[in-house]
Amino acid sequence: MFKLYFFQKRMAYLLVFVTLLHVVTLAMLFISTMEKSWWVWDEMENSDLWYNCRYDNMSATWLCASSKETEWLHPVQVLMVLSLVFSSVSFLVFLGQLFTMSKGGLFYFTGLCQVFAGLTALSAVLIYTLHNKEILQDNREVTSGHFGYCFVLAWVCVPLLFCSGVIYAHLRKKE
Image (cartoon, rainbow, N blue to C red; front, side, top):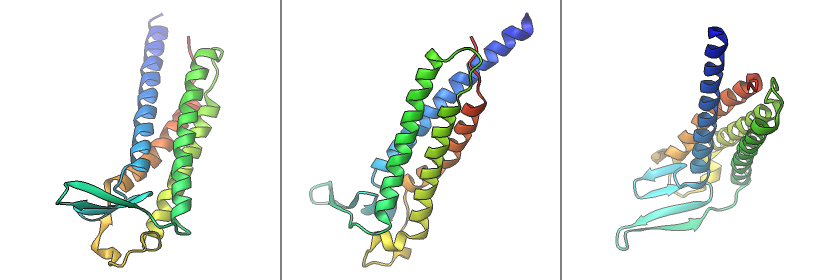
C-alpha cells in the first residue's frame, strides 16, 4: 500500500516537473525567436532574426530596420518558428492526452513533437553559428561583436527540448 502511494506521488511530481519544463522551454523559445539580441556589437546596436536595431540617445528609443533577406537568414527564421510551432503543438497534444488517454498510455506523439522542436532549433542555431557573417552582412567587422542572449537562450533550449521529449516518451499516464 505504501509503495503504491509513494509511486503515485512520485509520478505526480514528475508530471508537474515535465509540465513546468515544457512551459519554461516554450517561453524561452518564444523569447529567443522574437526578442532582439542574437548579435550585439555594443550596448547601442544589435541584430536579431527580424530586425537590425540601433539605440538613439536623442529620443531614448530603439530605431529598427528590417534585416536584409539572405540565403541563410530565411532558413534560420523558418526553423525557429517551426521549433516554436512544434513545441506549442506538443504542449497542446500533451494537455489533450492527459485528459483523454487511457490509463497506462505513453505520450509518444508529445515526445516526438518535442524532439522535432529540438532538431529544428538545433538546425537554426547551427546555421546561425556557422554563417553569421553572411547573415549579418554588415560593413563592420563581425569580430567586433558577440552573440547576444537570445542566441544563447536558443542554444539552451536545444538540450531541454531533447530531454523533455525523452521524458515524454517514457512517461506513462497513471490514475
